[in-house]
Image (cartoon, rainbow, N blue to C red; front, side, top):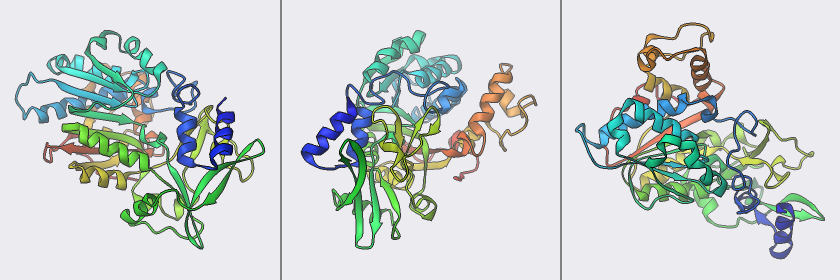
Length: 392
């Protein structure tokens, strides 16, 4: 259905931008990759996230939420509602883990938490209450867009990498854009003039100069989203967790071929010679690109947010745990005492393996970056930022 729809769209209106192709492939109301099912990640899915490791990730985020709520109440007891917004919430698995942590570690905060889940997939939204189980009564809203106003914390885990991006290439005559066209019944890429001057302005604002032949992705949608989130946040924090880089590293020789790719059953999909892999099976596979954290941070700051930290997930979670070094020993070995103090006597082989997976450099630990932003909170000394502020 979707390949035919895309081909018909191109024949009628001409080549479409990569952003438009991604939008249809991932978010078409009936046939989009993300919209037609409740869950895409996991052992049997196309990719694995920190949430798939188990409840530990959500439990650790819950500890950070408790501290942030304490900052928002200025250290005093409060009866005001605490808004917990998760964007890209899927069927609610991470929300359930975070709420479980609040319920067990800080019942008073749990009782005043209003949970808002933002998810574009109707199938995923329909599954949220069942996933939340005993925490379903804390669900204040479930919608496809951000709430118009909230005070608390917004969490987005692996959301921004799946937002549509424009792809550009620097040619001898200047900046060009990559478009998706159709040749007979086969999708292909072509180049042409940029679809909007915003693309060149984005690169100039980021201080980026592409060399001839370099391909790059530009996330106009992600920048617009963070502006919307910043405007909706009355006071509180944003925790954005995704894979990506600072602009100087993202737009460099290391990524001169671009970062746009597609995964199927947890491996990159095979390409057809020079044909990009992400053109295969529209609506049937994930498409993602690395996030430009520099431009996201700049957009947020222009909307009044303060950058509180950008660091590897390894160091973010180590800070929450109070660890001074990563836990890289064998799964059967004892973990440092701060871990035991945080998790009491509940530690077992499963939780030790989960912790290693979340922290391991080269895996989720260094691949995933955490950007923490604040509004109206000053510069608090957060646990998650207490370790090494390092991005690899």
